[in-house]
Image 1 (cartoon, rainbow, N blue to C red):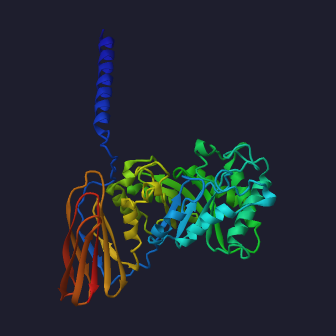
Image 2 (cartoon, helix red, strand yellow):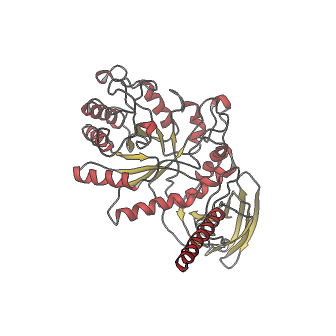
Image 3 (cartoon, one colour):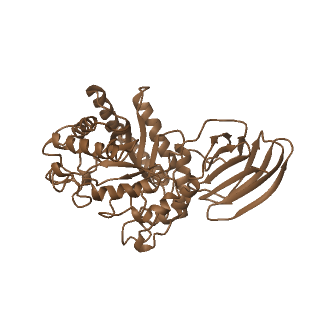
Length: 462
């Protein structure tokens, strides 16, 4: 009897424990609003920004001025966007589907008679924006494979196609472009793009080797970059396997690339830190996020001021973390209204600039030497630059789950005494100017930012 009572007591305790654990789990689950929220890694901490105008952390490289365009149309996608994109001063524009028969038809008449005309027009549009091309090497033409996401029937033929592509665009006797990126495939881990693995018959590593051997066979070419694997997320297994495979085979791996779609800006930097931890001190090639955005689905988020604030918050976390990050995408496809991934609507919808476009228009103005800055909060993040001794720029963004209106104290130290002009501006909001007199080398003000707002402060010596 005592044993039965004891057993019952144990069972009762187990049931109570399960019920309590379930209740705690339920209470801790996020409650999703109409737009997804960001789950911050830090408890709320208000910002109190201090900038040292006499510091110099080196030139700030605008790695964020790069864009990726998906296959929304089968030709002529970028030409209508040239004037608007030129204003953003892009460094690179990525395109995929370059070998598809129904897009550019490069291989439609076989390897012996490659036709570059339609692809050249797309590249000319890229160059007209001031950017260089970033090619995703894919997908398979009918002349080489049974399906556009299948392995080629003959790896040598794929190598030959890559060689011809590198010689055409990077060749000194052809397009004569320098610094072109060649990325082996697009999202190979995704079933829709082939569901490649790192072993077996459909082996991405074999695809990569054939691609590199083709690229390295190219003659009389300018410097270029080749890498991959452009996975749908930062999967350490994929990146490590490719890295070690290239080391063992003595293959070029100029960059490691992946994609990331999340509203959490901290996740982008966390990916990079995780990668460095995985490689445990080994030297890494260039790091490239070849697609990024707030959500992988086409969504009204992409036409919101939330997306603009997300752009600034993400760029802040990626400063000095990666070598290149390409926002997806430039323009929506037809018949998508304003809910596509683009920073611009399709021309059928007026080629309207969405809020993310205007965020990048501000980011194109980030120039100069990075200054030492302290006092960022859990939701208000910032960075500062000095273009010259007489112009200081401060960029701020208030972004995060449960973000509140913040009156951010700002102090700028080690300024020259005298008359300065202060400009305060809110993206999609107000702009004000004021003459200020600095007498002790220090300037103080308060910058008010509502949730999901971006602001900039400019101090110019008169």
